[in-house]
Image (cartoon, rainbow, N blue to C red; front, side, top):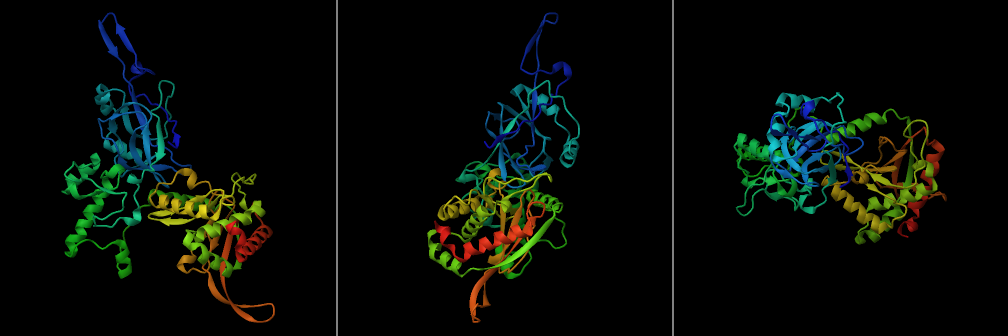
Length: 483
């Protein structure tokens, strides 16, 4: 597990029935034994420093199921990844407060955990009504609670790394049964359908047979979004009458729209996080410096070692890291507006567009790792990013950011500075250009434009100019990149 959430236990019984441990009191006058009960609340965990609310992807357990310490209970979508939330106590999942597909603020209750099977009914009676739960989802709870009488229903969180549960969003085809290796049919070989309670309820309401639905939840479990996708695919088939619905890639190539024009679409959790970060960055005074770099030697090196698994991203990250070694101020950061930090590591974050948002996987210690290992690590990070399986330290530890649109033919652009970092470099495409030599002759060389956006509180124009000169020297004579 990646970390443990320290949440607060909120007693759900009357004051006279509160207890910290399970105690049995004997009433001599009544001649009977009174058993006091304890119901714990499972809270929406904070899975990253920028997360304000989480979305329930799927409930791994159903109401009434027995839970063991360390067992996965629910899959939560954070702003950057889907994570399993584990129970930190033994007990029974008595009541689900927030259903699949809904969101809840950090720290708000999403379920109730009973200590014993006999207490499930009591927990259900303490469950908020549907209208109250909906209010809790849309509004943050501003009340304070008493923490002296109990222990939290602590949950621990970890990123699912098992290959059988990772879903490559790029491999799923709408209206098609053929999917990536990380997705399974809910029912195979006549076995029972494995689906969440809400998915079953939704399928029943929509009249959908779950036996052929592709499950994207843990171990192939069908969740609500799978049911919704199957219904949409079925509708497309019935309208066209020609077979499976057109996949997004095919629709794009044919020029057909893949969205409903005029519709209003709410942000995904990741898009919401990106939006908040971009707005926050507006409070930082930034400036931009551009530079033209000749890439003939770098292109030749790339062609030579590409067959060994080296990527252009790794080459650029390595060159940038080596330049930052000589210019540590460009690798620094200011977080409080009163001081700045010379970061002890050079961690190169690289912006990657994924389904539903943007994320920046981090190549840690890029200056110290050899180019071949760096390339392997980058491919691993991209795969995990697309499957939404990155761990927090793999996307929030960057000290300098790269954003490359050169593969799309973009020759130059400006990037917005991510909060908490000192600089970001936008990289354009390498293009043939006519260059005048010192002897007056004109030659053809490949050149690319880079533009650096920096925090002017810490980094000044001369700092960036010196850094870019060093970077140009490394790229135009890249022999040190393969050392």
